[in-house]
Amino acid sequence: MAMTGVLRPGHAQIRVLDLEESIKWYTDVMGLLPMGRDKQGRAYFKTRAERDHNSVILRQADQAGIDFFAFKVLDDATLADFERKLQAHGVETKRIPAGELLETGERVRFQIPTGHTIELYAQKTAVGSTIGCHDPEVDVIDGPGIRPIRMDHCLLYGGDIDGNVKLFTEVLGFTLVERVKLEDGQTDLAVWLTCSAKAHDIAFVRHAEDGKLHHLSFQMPSWESVLRAADIMSIKRVSIDIGPTRHGITQGTTIYFFDPSGNRLETFCGGYDHYPDMQHITWSWEHVGRGIFYHDRKLNDAFLSVVT
Image (cartoon, rainbow, N blue to C red):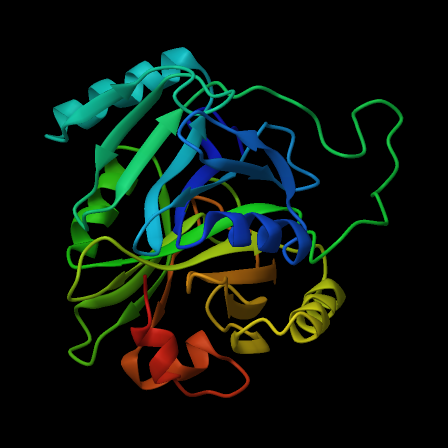
């Protein structure tokens, strides 16, 4: 699959209630690599395998949640092209200058129909992974915490998910991968979209309040590493929402848990490859429990309702 437009999720800025506590937690429990602080006091992190300077930014705030989620695009010309397409679609855009985020170039910021802020950017300083790019080892075997491969995707809650699907597929070139229908068999409860060959790069659930974060997800290399993450969570007394278990939707293995501020995170592994010529998968309301939690085959009320 030729990657010529939106390449992948790039970074997420997360609000936390106690920045110093969160810096320690994301370092020692999540096993992310600290990449510095900026003049605003924000803390930057990357995973061990990511090559760009940062993927997670933490900001001190009075309320947990997500400020924005960003995707990296191929180059500056692609960024300008998407900016024009968004404006032609009736979306107001704003250019954020290079350097406003550490080691990050100009960003095009816009709001989607569910009230979330999305960014596109083309440039971020490449600092390399922990194994390097010259005669590398397979992995670095030591280090603290869960140590995911990458920041993988997010699930966002809001009202007009139909408008989101239209914008992401018609303007940004994403593909609809899976959807869940409500009891009427017509209305989407949730949708999963990809800009790559992954099972999903972003997902949306219909919700009464706009602008909400359900979870930010980190990819793990294997089911065994997901189980190891569960052991670490128990040792560190992390609040676990559900798992380890498996999804019917996307077919990935998973644990959902909370950071000290109450933001839900996920360790995720697996999932199938999806290409634009494939038919998307539809789940009926009757089988939504099996779709979300394949082993239990039933919904968890807290999982559906707790958001930040």
